[in-house]
Amino acid sequence: MALDFGLGEERCLRTLIAHRVEFLVVGGYAVRYHGVLRPAKDVDVLAGNDSANADRLCDALSELIGVRHPNLTPDQISERKRQINFAEWGYKFEVLTAGGGIDFPSAYSNGITVQLGTIDVPVIAKADLLAMKRHAARPQDQSDVDALEAV
Image (cartoon, rainbow, N blue to C red; front, top):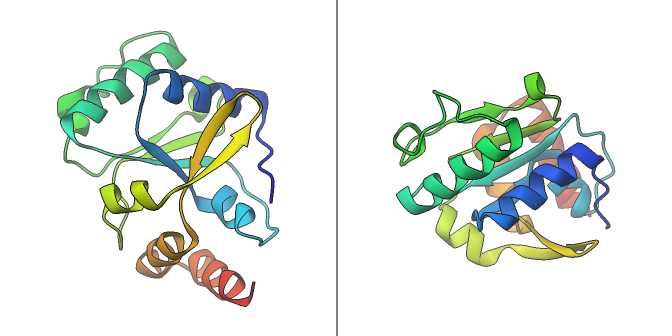
C-alpha cells in the first residue's frame, strides 16, 4: 500500500534522510502500509538511539525547528527512551527513540524501503510492527494486531 504524507511530515522525513538518521516509520502509517486502512493522527518514527545516530537526529531536528532545542541534545537521547512530539512546531510528527518488544538494529535491518517521490523511506517490517504493538498492549495496539493478523 502506498504511503501518503502531508507536506510538513514529508519535510520531516526528508530532513531525517538528508542527515542520514537511521529510523523506521512505525505506528498508524506502518499499519496502513501493511494493509490495514485506518486513520493516523501523525507520523511516528522510531529512531536508533546509539550515540552516532542521536547526534545526527539532533542535527536533523534542530534544522526542522530552526533552533537547537535545549532538551534535544545527543546526551539526552543517546541510549534513552524519549518521545519527541513536533506538534508545537506545526508538524504532525513524533520521534520515538526506543520501541518495546524489538531490538532497533535488527528491526532496522529488516525494514522495508518504500519509494516516496525521490526518496526512499524505511518502514518497519510487519513482524517487528506486530511485536511492538503486542508489547505496547494499548487498546488501539491490540486492535491493530488483530487487523494486521487478518491481512
